[in-house]
Length: 136
Image 1 (cartoon, rainbow, N blue to C red):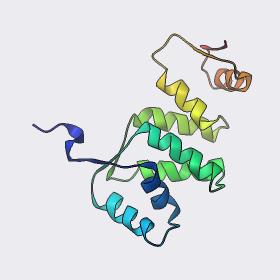
Image 2: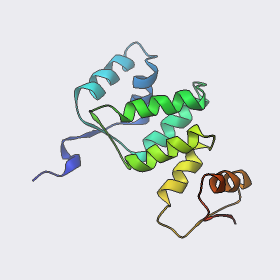
Image 3: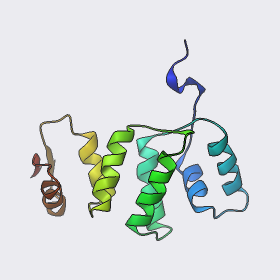
């Protein structure tokens, strides 16, 4: 019996970005055919990098990035690693928390707490109900 990911093709950040931005005459249509035409797997690390690229290199605001990543995750052909964690991180990002910080919190939820030197993160995390976040 094949494992769940055996029939799936993992895709890189550049494929995701070309799909979402449709900004390249050759690569964007190729990414659309690939993602729309078969089952693909998107790793959490790819989502993290795509969020950063869309925000930093393309200048999209946080709401646009969150909407784009949600749309990607909602495609029937896309399996997102730790989709629940990513969704929660997108919710927190939508409320103003840095997406990477929100993802760090979600991925470490099984731990007794989270230590950081980032006071802004401590404040935002506590406001969002993550009481185990503390200054290192």
